Image (tube, rainbow, N blue to C red; front, side, top):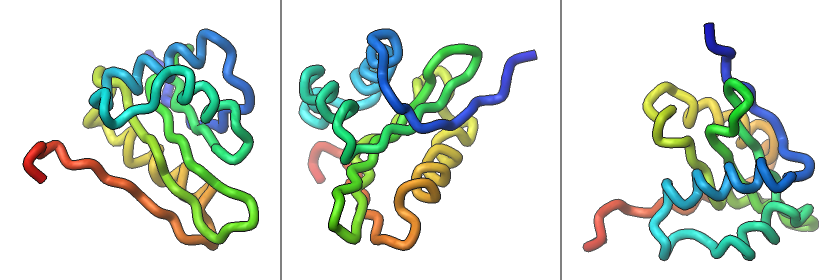
Length: 120
């Protein structure tokens, strides 16, 4: 029997966990909607960003990244993705709820939603 997914805050990304995060980012977002690997790495290591990861069977299968600037009354959910193999199982919904409840309570949460429609 497989383990249930766990949701937790990433305190420090090692090379392996960072590579898993970035692989999910690359597969989930078109190149014009994602940061370069260098900028993504800087964002993950910046204390103003909160990174939540979803683990299942010792693998990272999803993540969210929230910008939570000090001295501001808002947060910005910048990235959220689930590995394509694990989509449509409710993991994204659970990740969203975990993220909002962990970092956006009692504040305004901004979301940027990209359209799949290139004409939009």
